[in-house]
Image 1 (cartoon, rainbow, N blue to C red):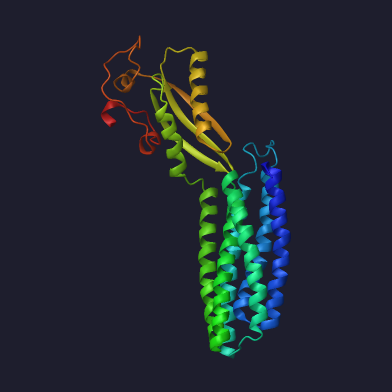
Image 2: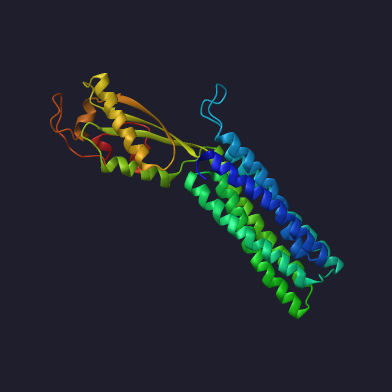
Length: 330
């Protein structure tokens, strides 16, 4: 399954299977009365709700740009991930509330063998779906799919820990361990929700991605051409799986418009080759000035006014600066 349609179909299958898993976990809770199993079942409600949001956001992201959304609909992925993170945290708080109430009422679980079998099977399915979703999300740079996969994986591993906890309760007959394990899982669930929510806020607020920016800048530095005198005001913005880059490039002032455009096209090809995602690139062309000569590596420049002094290495710190570079700044 490739392309946006493949991602949508995969997410739809995950949603359908998630509803079946939710039913199995609630059946396990009804049979056992275990707060630990209930915490797992409540998280399944979250899985289904988040899966529905994810499916809608993937569908919306796949829509083409329109007059009202000239940059596309990719930002909705960050909103979807934020809603999922918020629901994760609320679920964790609800589990703690239920566990404390059961502890005070001294309620204990029963028929644990059946509950262990049902929840263990559901956890194994979640593990497989989580691995598939996260791998797919990373491949297509979809924060929605990656967040859904990460959430399912956290659910699967918490189920594994829960099964061990239920086995311990079964063989020790210490019932208050049920509430203790439920609260431990709840804390982990809240932590997972905070991480997902934090990533969504970073995307909505257009927070920079230093690792990605360094990768693109390094690719330009490796194949840097003599006419590419300077690079500054380098910025990136993510729109779901797509990436928007804008920057300022200093070129020799005497180049014709056609020649300057050819240099920009060459730089754009390097940028797109260094990214495994769709890239929208805007490069503002600046003409060189007398102060550019000391850092210009174009040795055969016919208009040079001062000798070359030092080459400015393009790094994350230097390229993201807001002004042109000079020999004094290096």
